[in-house]
Length: 245
Length: 190
Image 1 (tube, one colour):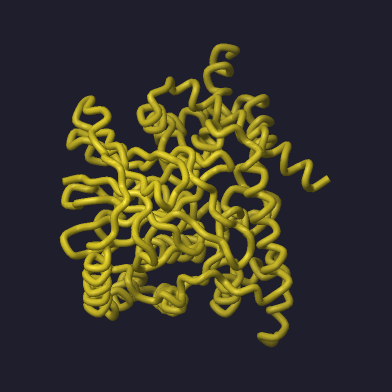
Image 2 (cartoon, each protein chain N blue to C red):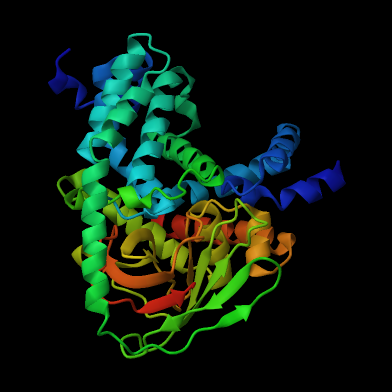
């Protein structure tokens, strides 16, 4: 029992953060049912984990989401087992063609604008271990006084792996009231600039951002500074670039 | 009961009506928590379409399993955000977000920050700053693993691979970071 407790006790933080793989999580929960110490530790740390989602910048949920949800609830209440899907399909179908056209045009215009932008250092392959790659980023030192970044790209042997941009020593952005800013990632593909994750850095300028997409057909990853919540098109030339092709 | 009446209900009282299957109460319930839920999902997946889908899935699951809410287990908002977090992690791990960002060009006005309309919103913004302040008290390496786990949806083994460190170190940093953050939050509350 003591050995069990020791091996499980160190997982309490990972459990509360949702970072245990499914099998390990199930085993941990079985252990906790019979371990008062672990239960107490979970309850002691839980307020911190519960507070994390409250740190997120508040955004307005789209009105279309509420309409779609309430449609689905009405369908559900009417006994249709597949209730949610028709509402979601309607929502997506109504906006897809128009959105794609807008994004391609915005991306093409911005690429033209960037044809005259310079100021970047040279990037290269930092580490080619395994199938994955660690790519050094180019930081525009004319606009960012300091900082470095690298992109970890999972290999083909990691089909569920996600790329992660790690940054070090970047200038923290304003985070007070209406002037809140975030760093935002963009995926550049042919004539498209596709919005991706937003992230902030700690007081010493370090941070990381996961990119939910694979980067198989992406030419470059950019970072710009945008207002909190992110933007649909970059508002400035990239301050960080990682070339993938 | 008029609609005017239920807008004054506390979350827990409103939840009783939701548990009885009242769609009007559920709509108000969504009005109160939908923004926070969408914001969390968007922070995690980084694109609007997937954030909408995940939020909708989460609220539908709440509607369908509404009788499972137990008042003793914490605030309604914590319960809602916990469900959204789990749903979003599921989506990330199923790679549902693959290649869907190209559909996210609509509704710029809807992605702007929520305006500060009410006292409740002001309190929530203060709360957000307090939590961010608590996160900033952490050593960088602890903050880093917590953000990768909670907002990135990575498992401890993925984080260990990514940062090239033992799994035990990652778990230790998560636990120490949460402990320090809890103490920082306690200090603010005191």
